[in-house]
Length: 110
Image (cartoon, rainbow, N blue to C red; front, side, top):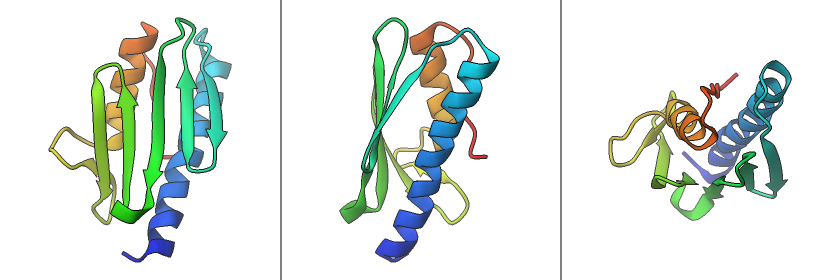
């Protein structure tokens, strides 16, 4: 994958995260503040904990930092998978966000 393809795929992820936050805020009592700065999205939960998602263009990875740790995701042609076998990006984000918010939250690619 070249840099332009990476940026196209990665930008889709960030937009999907933002759209998921909007949907979650509309459909639930969760209050997720999402802030976007360039290639980084910060999710801030009501308890002030955060999840940070940022693009690592030189490595063609998406990095996610949560209370549980830091994770790196690479595109396998279909989805973004953890480089250490910890699962798919949106499933992981849903799990981490649910843990940090104390409510079941679902993030999706579309």
